[in-house]
Length: 75
Image 1: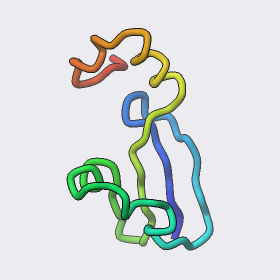
Image 2: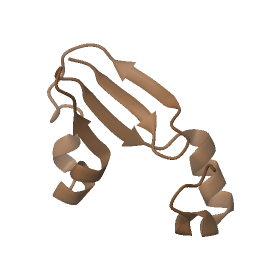
Image 3: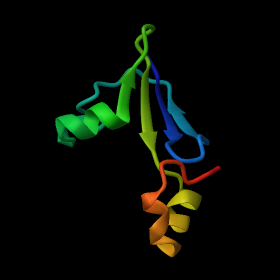
C-alpha cells in the first residue's frame, strides 16, 4: 500500500510514501468526515490518494484570493 499526494489544483504529483502506514498515523483521523471524503480516496489495490495543495498554488491563492471563487484555478 502506498500513499500518493497530488495537488488538487494543478494535478502535480507531490510525492508518494511507499511504506505501509495506517491512515491514522498520517493524521487522517483528524479530518472531519466531509474533509476526508473530499481529500482522501482509496483505490482497489489498497493505495491511498490524497488531494492536497502544492506550494505554487498556495502562493497563487494567497496573492489572488479571488481565485477561491473559481472551480478550477489552472485553466
